[in-house]
Length: 504
Image (cartoon, rainbow, N blue to C red; front, side, top):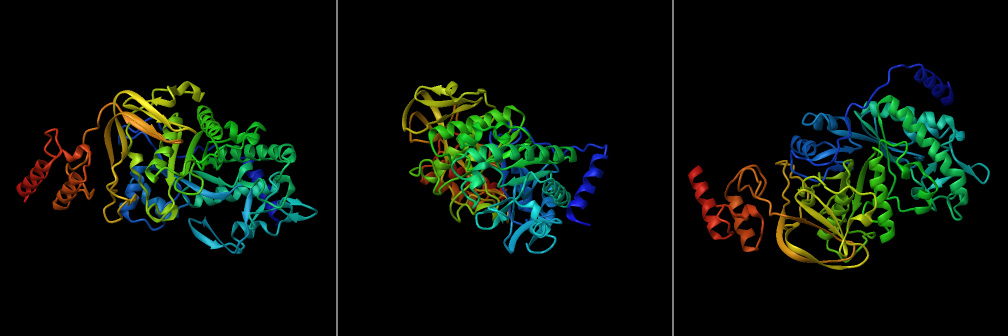
């Protein structure tokens, strides 16, 4: 039986199925995490395979979910959090043709891409499924991925049917559909349909993409799965104005805005952030994935901590209860998406609930900067120009305390080592494209057990050594006041030693 006949038969069965499924796990709202006292909700792009129990427990309690993991790892994480979200990874409008291309099939990594069971193996003998130009020439993206004919009914049916089969085998709640937007393919293929002038792209491709998006969304929704495409950072103004469905928040359950915080200009940043708010207000969830320390930083002169705060600050400005964040850095210190579970100090920010809802960023103007208010403080942001900010009072500036450059969980303990410090300030010198988080009151110490400075779940001599080192370095963490006398000095070390002696 041909692929087309098989898919048609599948569609007939689907049309006569009366049971409408619903996604098993809800997309959690993100107004405020009152259990963990956090204002930022983290969605991990992916984790490494073969997690141990410590890493799985950490992921379950620190992330909303993740993508492209083997079934055994997801099942392990869900032993600690049954609502943990899992997204399948699948290219949305292209199919990769290289020999060694990894996908999760039947719940496991599969990289034999020229096998008949791979995605490429299933479509390569069906020429009608490919987008052609200049006669019968296939459209090549990036030298390796073939752009598909998304108006072809056979391709549409194959994509959704194969996607559902792959998701069911791997315990997935939805699909992260990558390489989807105009920005992802424009100027990157050998097909003049996707090059200047833009007229053909607008008139010939965007309507087909909108129809395809509606088809995929409708079928996945009826089958109980989320459609979660990569919609990039929405800075391609002409594509937004041309009515792309994703820029309006139509036919989406959720979407990743990749390169979050890495816009090309101040105007593009305003457009991207405003779109993120508009889409959330339509009931769609946004996952902002930002990269810092690379070639696309909006202000390359910021240090890495400042760049991370820019990504976290823009998230805090835009979150309207349906937004997640992830951040990835430039080197082995951050490890990226295929190594250890990452955790940055900015993820620990506790501002409480946001107080300001907005549709236009102009309503957030506060003197010469932008400000968004929260229950416990506020966030400030600059755009293309540096600013001197008179705060009109004393507030506590939240920053990486510099205690570690290992921004990941220890697999032996399941704990991370990061921390925030809070410095009293009355004014700020803010560089261009930077953000600052300020609290009304200095947070108290929430370390449990008290004095566990190395995060291993116990209090001992190793913690006393860290306490002494932090005091000598002039640290301002409220936990350094071990004896609670309002001061941070050698008497705290003495008090800690006395406690160890008593416990021995």
